Length: 105
Image (tube, rainbow, N blue to C red; front, side, top):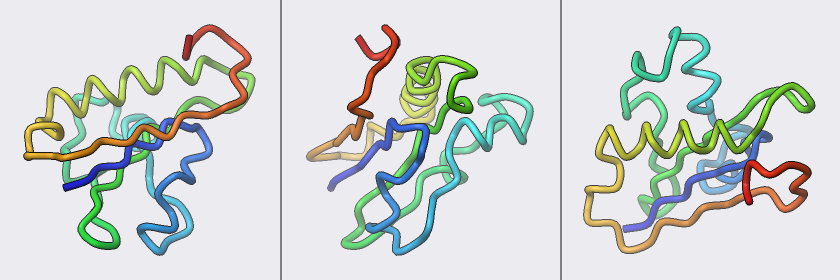
């Protein structure tokens, strides 16, 4: 079993696997719901091609906040909700490559 965690604010890491434009991100849905505690794992974790589990952390608008904080919040949420407990063989983290702050360091 494989899971991909998109860690880029653009939220485009999983779109080809899901055959969709963009997946709703944990940060977007948390903002709509009020907080990350108000989300359920089923709201953000989607199954794509070959049963690959897909989730996108999202992040703040460019220039507004630290994307690293969004990733930390998302990974903590996934851990708390048991996303990593499902006999996964691989978890891929697609992180952005143009780091301009220390949030990903």
